Image (tube, rainbow, N blue to C red):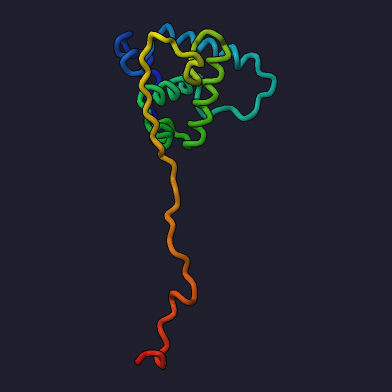
Length: 146
């Protein structure tokens, strides 16, 4: 698991290099998370990670785009828990109104921008194989051979 204290004690430049954001922005994110936790009415099962670690996990994902399996291994949790934490952090930060995280492309297109779009069809399609029937798989009868 990444050492939270070691990361948070980094210099401003080192912290920004690791996370991609300034320490002040991290502290604002932490405040938004703490406010959300304070407003919760149901407690539920507590997370294995602290709020700081949850934010660092999400920042690691956004910064490095590593697989959830590897991030989960680093933080000592399952990949599904890592995915859930990332979605939770995203939703809380967007709902706070302090941060603008893009959810989709802009709905309008400026005329002064020359857009070039490449669409790649990467859907999986099954391979069509001939059906196995008795007629195609049975060898010819011996009495029919001249």
